[in-house]
Length: 177
Image (cartoon, rainbow, N blue to C red; front, side):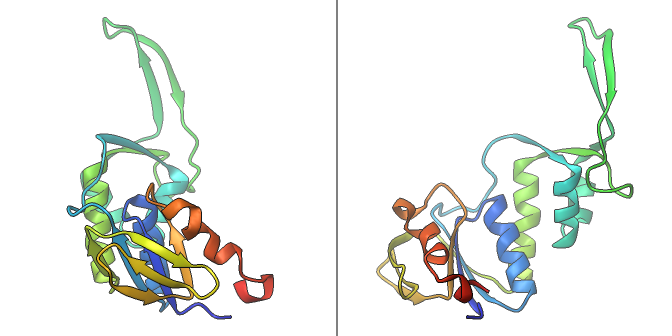
């Protein structure tokens, strides 16, 4: 079974990254996000090198480099500001990338949202999945509309009682390819 239509449930970092990657591989991707406003939740985030490499693969690293602060070492300080220790952090994303980047979650989400739209993903806000037939991929949304997908992925807190994650897992191994 080839996968040509995908529903991503959850528009946070994971769902946005997945939607971009699948759309870039010519899948028709719909993304639903329960929040009526699409923004990053929380304040700061530390992004390690391997995640920076993933951001680069989906074309958002350059945007993040203008908004975040890259660093290659961790400094621990006493309350008075004097140095306790300075520890290098590994470059898990490879030698061309910083070891780590600190950023605001809202900045990361804004960069991802822009790229999701650019990738041609159909985004539906204020919406979630009400029901899922795991044998067919047929979905009923919270607004009463319906859809049918080859693959349904739960990428957020709103997992429809575990039904979303079950769709691909329940396919026979030969059908998952």
